[in-house]
Length: 178
Ligand SMILES: Cc1cc2nc3c(=O)[nH]c(=O)nc-3n(C[C@H](O)[C@H](O)[C@H](O)COP(=O)(O)O)c2cc1C
Image (tube, rainbow, N blue to C red; front, side):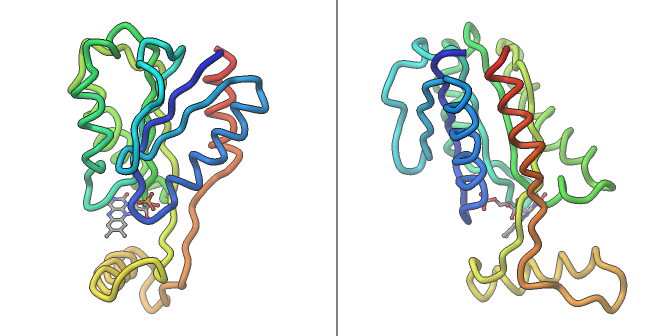
């Protein structure tokens, strides 16, 4: 796999950190990678120049960020003739009981909106709750939601990191090799 695009958006930095690792692994495998946070920039080459286009987002309140979805909408014709993979980074992927829900709501439903695109893979990755990164209101809200999922009486830790780096490395390695 020669030239790879990774187009994503991260609200609190977790997805950015995951993309950095994907870039490292793909480059070590010999690929040329353009990774772009779509809020900050755009791809340096036309879509048709890429052998693989990966589009991803962090999840908040059940939703993707808007820029990656706008990217797919805008380029759906060209993407229908490209190799395309999707990934999300979310809290639900960190809990076995919510994984199926996350796969169907955050990945399968998005893929189904673009029947003309034959997605080659979807990656469901656990993210992170790092309460220092949130403002006061968001911190209080997310702590309440997280606490409701913990055993009764358990305190919410300052950081909950669900990222499985081996899973992330394995996913990108598999894509680069195909
Ligand atoms: C305000 C807020 C709402 C969230 N809502 C969800 C959600 O509905 N489902 C989920 O699985 N994860 C949810 N999460 C967890 C995020 O997906 C997780 O923190 C992820 O790492 C965020 O990625 P980012 O840092 O790249 O934005 C939420 C996090 C925050 C801060």
